[in-house]
Image (cartoon, rainbow, N blue to C red):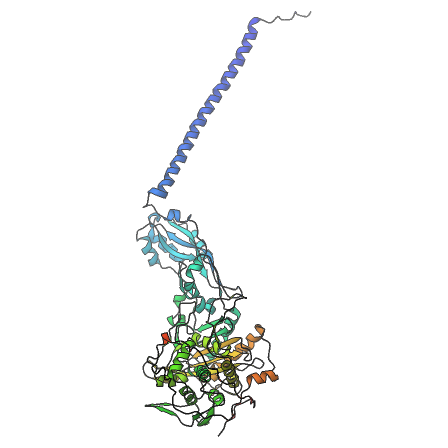
Length: 619
């Protein structure tokens, strides 16, 4: 039998409601507790952040005695020093990021142990030097600048307290010693100390690159040939240059010995001496180019004139004579004087002009002043004062006036470049760059001197520098070196050769100088410019011509023959032997005040009715 359904009691609903209320009250309590905890945690974080901020502010602004090392590593890194390149964009100097090691001695726990372990990791730094720095007080000391990555890793792995690294930059020279005398070098803080690095220090430091006129290919080429001659003739050193006569750009400049720009202080001091720009020398017979140009430009000497070289010239207790006298004791034509490099004949020519005109002319060529080159290593010529008649005579054959090699190359370029002087430069010219230059001789004089230079390369002392097809013309020089107040040495020479090509339309000048060469079997014991320097110039031209696209010239072409050949035995005047004195300027003038004449008289063109390919000796 089914039981009857239960009737709900009134207190059941009350109990259910009470249970719900109890649950809601518990949840609220939990939430309240969570809120309280969040507030506490937030307050703790806020206090911590405030403490950190206060400490950072204290470190940054208030506590000066605290170690700078702690903030050194986060200092902003300034812009890198800009690159130096050759004319074709090849890197000659650039900067690489490196790490430098420093210490906060106050944080070093054991100075002796730290110094010991660092000396083992960095053998190039001595234990004593490190220990002295760590025990010297202070809060920041450099231990080693510009570490290699391997060195940095070795120090880092030591895990020594008180040591840290700072990012810096190191100057790198990809060409090494090859361009050291031009590019120069910097100190450890990247301040330029020599060469282009010094002259353009501010510009490079601002991140502005410098593009040089140097062609690294020609630089290697010229250096290699000069090194060969130095070794072959057991010389002290040497140097050379290649110049574009139309712009004055130096395409190569070599001085040997040279040095490693990464560590310039490790070699001998003489290695850092730039023989081409800083050294001043009596250049010897290459100066006869200027003497001949002066004589022809004055109008007092013509190409078909003859001079008396029958006997030496006696000046007091000194005698001016020729190198090889057996075939030169006679009257000589102007072309013969040049080709046989007669000292007597050169003096006879300048006697027609006088000392004042000579001084003025050489000053106009820049041979008496410091060259305005873009490196600090430039020398000042030694000029006689007063400029007497005896000075005039010795200067005619390259003694008694000392000038830099770059002075001489610049002046030579002006003579062969239709008489237009353009200053030498180591900075690349833009492709569309035009420079007017300054006229120092007439075009007629330039053409006549070029004929003589070409003749000398065919049958004279420049034969060893001649290159078929390139119409080379040049002049050798062999100068006795001054003996330190004891006159001139008979065994120590400066042997040189300066040439241009092609002589019908000159583009480039090549110059080589060898210091104190010694003769050998190959040179039959001679150490003159003809045997020592001319061959090196010839080899450079033979390589440079094709590289620079200079087309070979057909030397049998009638137009070339007319432009180059000269009559060496044409009958002409016989010049006297008395020195010409300018009545308006009887006293020598100050070289600094010397100026070119207002008007230079052009010499008459040489008599070319008879074209001779070689000099004929006349008895």
